[in-house]
Image (cartoon, rainbow, N blue to C red; front, side, top):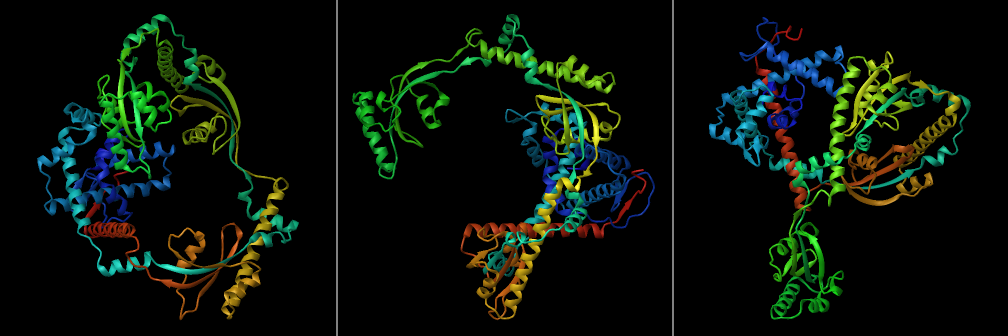
Length: 636
């Protein structure tokens, strides 16, 4: 769909997915490309793409929406330095969309009225109870200020572009040579050996003096800082607290019960008995079914159900009670059992019913019909629901009043505000960009606390929702910028880092020395022995093999292939400070056939990647050939 639909979606996420979803692949592979042949034109339109006009108003409206989306997501104004790039990105999108629309029309892609109608009627957002509803359709569009004619015209163009891109995608393929190369690389295996040189051995022996500590502290100052923080005062409104305030008077309860009577019904219950024959290795499916059928024949001929259940049922929970399951509603049983039970008449015995437990013979003993609960019989449940509803109404009312009080400046003191709206108060001594107990660290709260508005002036801020039933208002009492911790307070931590760094360098130096021995003709076992560690026996691994640490596996597959039967060696540093000595002994090209399902997934992945690359190249070439003129003053 065209941008001017998406620009007005905002909270209508259902429609955003409907109208923009089909083009997601296209936008994902476009990337950022320049616009060809830009030049200044008159101010009567914003862009001309191969002679087609995009009005100034359309571009300005799209830019306003882009700014609004940015501010909502990041809770900040767009930096001036970034505005030009965002504007260029918007122009690029408009050009690409226009070029695709033109290509779809040029190559004769057409959408019939029947196709368009089917697409719209099948969209769930326009349905009521699973069926298209014209009133819902018009109502949804009215929320966006769109006419049905305008929406349908844009939907038609969107479907034309879908047909174009689908044609481009499905026409792509991989040649046998390409497939062979893919399997050779992706299913390749490498035979390796390695040994790990532990950092701990060298770190323990490292000498750490005062000069080294000071040098490390000075060059790693960012690692030893107290984070930016504030001290803040807050007042918190919780739905649970308001619920406890609500009194449940008899008149209010009666009115609520009468309005919601259908919610308070007691389900139909059934009293059943059963005999279970389990399906096991010793008693397979056919044998268990045959036994159940034989038992049913005995019951039909007059055999006592309880006696037969005690003798033959394999349900330990009901066997001793003659198969009696007591009273229960439908939800107490697994679906096949419940379906069979609720199809029986009192005294009737079912055919064998298969569930995950085995085969059941079910007899319906009694039925207790569902009935409405009275106010007295369900008073506790009704009272809880009533109080929760009233509390939700009060929560909404107080939120509205709270917002108004803060916006108009009449609320200045948190204590007074808390008293007025029955809010709990508190103080957070250290609230960082990671948050602070008991308020947590939601992105909305962190952004609000560290906004310029909150940090300047000591004013009330909020309310900020911390959930569907909890909100907070706050005042920043003190701001503390990030500051270096005194060296003396982190001396032990710095000394440990210096020691670890020295150990890592020594471990790598040892691995490098062993590598030199290998390159001088020593065997892998000899080189490893000089390190005083043990080597892992030779192993053959694939690209995703978990038995080899990731860094070693990546290094093994990045290594040159062994030449003339001579292993390829390398030394490398590992995460955590350890070092390693790695030998690639042999390389075995991959081939299809070992796992057909994995092979097909691999082919599908590369076909998709190939298609997306071709689609991207097609769009880029259209841009290169396009005549595009832009009004450079459109965003002024």
